[in-house]
Length: 335
Image: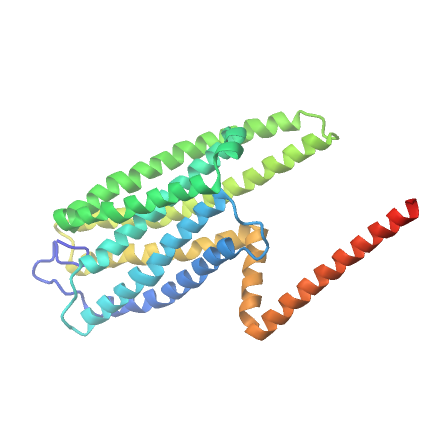
């Protein structure tokens, strides 16, 4: 029983050659896009060249990007190697080497999106509690808990086998979490609508009211962005779930069809992992600026970077001296 066609195709355990090489060929560019995009996201948040991305919310974004990096660095390459070996009819490696990283990354991705959903709900429904209680340390604790669960839960697969575990995973982690997503985002959108109606009824010339409306618009944009990410998750995971049902329940499907159903979930997970950074760049100007800053620094040689840093420090020192000199001059004039 495995994702790779050993069940129900007991008499044809090896996929047709063209399916193996097609899957391997598609996986290669998807891996490259996934690694490059999510590596930029992680570096942008933790290096933060523009100093405006370090927040609990963005730490959850980084956690999602790290889980997607696991897909690009581990799941994708092992899938390519497996399918090439399958295509040339070499002895295949044990399937847990592919299945367990696959389930770890899927679990971490779904739970990271759940953490982002909770973050959005608290930020909109209880803004005071959100600002005072959710700090980077607590966000780090939540992220660590997600990885502890994601690393331990998939090892049930070693006891149950692929088909049983995939159904458990499907009906707990995936479908259960998606129902929570839909219910929570429905409440978030209602809260946003009520909040905007209240703010629109206030005096628009008041500076404080303008600041509140601007903050509400920003929260709305962030929420809409993660509704887009959730929609992309649904577009990739629901067909994968259907494929699991086909492999498990279809007794009259041809082995060729079963082998396609085996490979499609892997390709869709790679697509989902690779597309998220492009959504951040499309929707958030601060991410775009951070990406551009990182790419510019990458193009510079180390010597150029040191010269630029020294020039920036010199400029700051000169500004500081100028401000200090003006202040002393004013103090002397007053005396």
